[in-house]
Image (cartoon, rainbow, N blue to C red; front, side, top):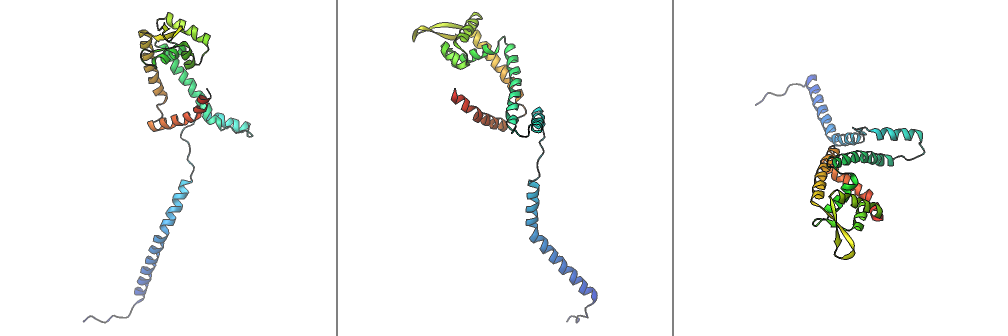
Length: 216
């Protein structure tokens, strides 16, 4: 048989009080933790993020907002950047074509023929529609390309009064080499974007451009 319990001391009462307080504190923490974490997560989600990059368009927009607060200058955020990129693309295009003895307009005509596939030919009318120039301008360009040995004229079997403009072997070689060089330079321009970013940007640009293509 065990010994009968002796009288409880003040130390016993203090230990029980400490234990009860600890249990109550733990229960309070457990019940409040989900709400606390939710509030903390919501608070962190609302913290604004600071853009990592800064360019000249940002400065331009800030300056115009300061000088003309009555105007909405938000379109500049997109279109001013497109304008600047267009200048860099133009430099890349002219460089790629010049390295292969071509001017930009020559590449445009030759590539329109090359995209048709064998026998790489179009009527002058189809060419001017593909390159968005006037009839007189296209006639002059065909003359110059023919003189350089890059295209030749052939009678159109479907139209006794018409001709077909056909890409020569030299013309095909020139446009193929220039295209490969251009694509290499364009990849450099897009190096800051991954594949997903490029697809998203292309989709957004398509939305912007589609109404203008439809109007043409």
